[in-house]
Structure formats: structure tokens, C-alpha cells
Image (cartoon, rainbow, N blue to C red):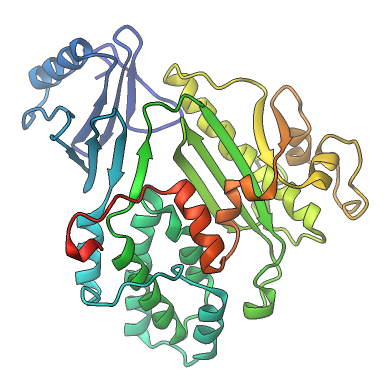
Length: 372
């Protein structure tokens, strides 16, 4: 690719290549390449080069009525130019592997606080077989949550942090019921959307303490490109003082403190995405704009107030200095209901969950009885 083809391998994303003259991007997973080109001319040039230099199995070109399978995912071009990414076949395979192919689909979120509380009450320790089964469940949910179903992300994160007790299997069953109901869902890139990169940050201040005893807060992050989710994150908060120290748990003393740490987490991910985008010749304006719904956190970051309950933080620490570098990032206030990162911070009730879900996920119309 590099020596003969003139491609440049990205520094910030392994196994991804860009051709500066042809404007072609190629992502390679093991022996499965995905080629994105400006026009059919550059596409033909790329495939001819690969056919000549590699042992290939032919070429599949994305077209209306001719979807592409990539890493078990289905990429489909719609009549209006929209492109969808779904994973139904893989989801069905996972249901079969777990013996859940006949489970009843649910209209509830994959996991609620009440369901988590009931699962935590079943505290008989798992035996070795039960632990192995748990790991298998988490592996399946992990694939879906990281590819086409960000709606599983928070539930999976909470499931992974549960102790090794029987209630884990109850929680997993509820999540399989959700997968059964949403196996046809995915992501969509809308042709009419030209919004570019948008970054959202949010947090939930020790929201599960009353159920699990967890005192750490949770960060939520979402990045979209032209309206399509391209990166999302949910996780308990930690900080890194510098590149030479290990991550340490961060216990937020206030909601503003939790939002500030979430902003730092989000900035790191946004910066990484911007580095990849720059290598692919995609424009990410500097300073990067990150949308936050907490005025107090913005006040602390911009050093205009809001630090009354954060005086324990050392302003000299690298993560705070990075946050406050206005050449790198700026923080825009957004109303809470519009902050899509909230979806990745907590176990919401059904109404709130699906209000946000419909803004993030692609939900096609049912095409056969089992999808209804």
C-alpha cells in the first residue's frame, strides 16, 4: 500500500491508509478492506491496484439495492443518498449462541435502575462456569455496543461493573430481550446533513450510589459527523495527571466537578478524532467546540467562576491546563434535553431513554413479522 501504491498509513489510526493524490481512504481489518473514494474513477484505480498487488476475491461496489457486508455489518445505500450501517445477522447469531433466540422482545431500555436493583439482590456468588458465561455475554454485548448499537453502551458498562453474582445473568437476559427488539437498528449517515464534527459532553454525579454503592461519577461523550455517531463513550471517571502517571479514580465532590472531569475525558477523545480527521483531510476547526449543559463547569474551565467546590483541584495539573487552553478547545452551553451525551451517563427510564435513542440510532420500519 505504502511502497507501491503511494498511500500514507495514518499515525493515529492503525490499518488505515490515505492516498493524498487520489483522495482515497482505505480501512483494513485483517484481510477485509473498505475503500472510500471521491468518484468511481478513483475507486477503480484503487481496486485495480489492489487486484494487481494482492490476492483479492473481487470487488463489491456500494449501490442502491447492492449492500456491502463489512465485518458482519451491512452497509446500505438508500435511494435518497443516505447510508445505513446495521448488524442484524450478527445480533441474531448472538441470540442463538446465548440460547435467547426465542426470548420475548422488550419495549423497556436494556437495563433500568429497578432491574439493576433486583439483579443486585440476587447475590449468590457465581461458580467458574457462571463466570465464563458472564464473560461470553459481555463479549457479545460489547461487539454490538461498539459497532451499531450505542444504545447498549451504558447497560453494558454497568453490567461489567457488577460483582460476580447470579443477578448478572438476570441483567444479561433483560439485555438480550432488548437486542431481540432492536436487532434491526443501527446508524445512519444522512446525505442532506452537512453539520460536520459535533462533540457533546455530560456526566452523572454518583448516580448509582444508592443501588450499587458506587461513589464515582460517570462520563458520557458523543461525537457525530454530519449527524451520524462516530464515537461514543461511557465510563466511571478517572484522571491522568500526566503522560507518565497511571490513571487514578476521581471522586467528584459536586456536579460541577463531575462535569469538569467529563469535559476533560471528552476533550481527549475529541482531540484524537481530530488527529485522525486531519490525516484524512477532513476539516476540524480549532478551537474544538464541545457542548456542555453545566454553566458551573464552564465557569471553572474558563476561569470565570464556578470553582467554589473544586478548590481541592490543583490548577497546575496537565488535564486542567489542557481544558483551559482556548487555542485547543472552547465550551458552549447547551440545554440539557439537547445534550445527546446525557444518553451515555445513566440508566434512564423508558420515556427519556427512547426520546434520546431516536435521536442517536437508526430505527428502520419493520420489514417482516419478526421485526414488528
